[in-house]
Image (cartoon, rainbow, N blue to C red; front, side):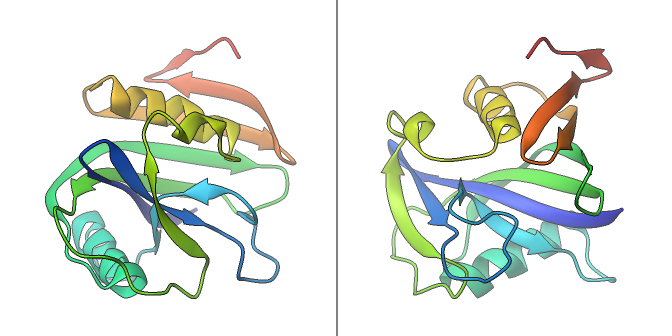
Length: 156
């Protein structure tokens, strides 16, 4: 299982999002996601996410909060422990990212964007201010088949 990070960055009523449209053979192709990536061997989750945000946006996050861990199991891809964060960037604009197009998306418009089914679950937890959580998501292909929150299966 690889370790990755993901952060949802906010400013006022918007999230800074990445529309994954630039990389070939990208499992996230055409999805809207936050910023993050694989952790390096010597990094803590916090060090990894700060590095990834700087590399992908050129910006420095403020108020970084470690919100949960998401375990991904897939019939097609390597398993993953994703360390999930939220942060703010009160000013500045991101530079061009080689993984996709960046945009500030109003929080009220976010749900209409193409995204993984499981992302909708953890975004709701983040928006509702849930305490630190553990979420296991099992996919068959692109279809979410199981979601377990803090040891209890969710009805999909």
